Image (cartoon, rainbow, N blue to C red; front, top):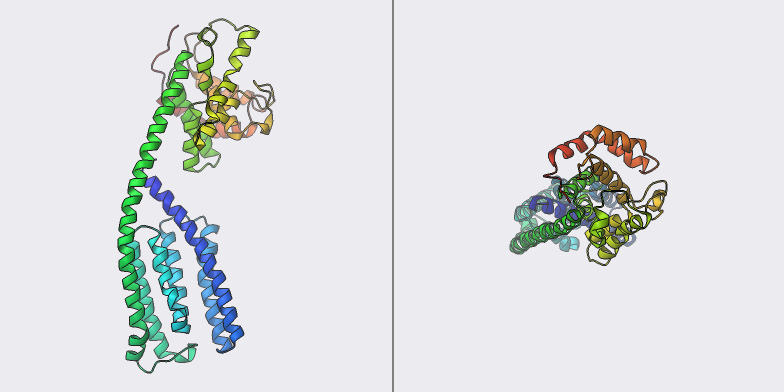
Length: 397
């Protein structure tokens, strides 16, 4: 995950916050116009038209953005700000001095995005809207609820100029605040990227230790992580969660560190007692990971414990069907596919086609049928990963 991803994620989160703010504005408008009706000092027809226009404008970001999942689109913030400014323009036009404090809201909303250009855009559009408002009030006073002006000079000096001055002044302050926040945000992103990369490096190092102990190659955990990305994406995971699941998957065999090498690397069939000891690596893995902080470690603990469970309940711990976590059902397919297609000192690797047929044959037995269907749809991607990350060598005892 690079800076572009983190910035995109931040923008998405801010768009969600902005939409929630617009919902608050919608509630405010309903209450405000209800009070205006109760006061009964204004033309009810014009008041109704004004209220309906405001509500319709505010509803655009409140409904259409969530409906069409537009949170991650760059244009979304412009839609939100434009709708906000239009609403303020209608209110200022109809009520002028009563709603003056509302002119600050678009600038405050824009400043959340830590983008100086966006603050400038907001201030220019809002200033232009205030000029249009003044023109409308002077030329069509019969459609304005509160009109107290006798000339263009009067309306400009007593209303429009103070509003535009306030907008420019607040934009000036917001510009420098945003500049500072932008620098801090960049530092935060760089720190987050560094910490994530360091964590992944440590995870890979520990995971490779467990694989080395069992005479397997480090490429096994790399391929399993990539297979998990394919299955996670096909399952509808978002990019951030998918990356965490794939990283956590590299630690699924960490418990092997606690198993004697003579059992892990025994070329002949294990005795019942030896197999019982081998099976305990899933519980060792869970124990090593479950108390570690962070979502990745929690996911890793789940997969470490459950990656040998079977859909029909015949796995190491006897878990069955949906008792098994979904991510564990994913890694069951990814791990077995790689184990079958990998060459080891004690066996030759199967072909991709042979492993493919074996997984399909065990759908509903070893594997979740729904996961197998995802595997079938992504067969070519699995083959590409298998070919792209070959084992560097097969370790001998």
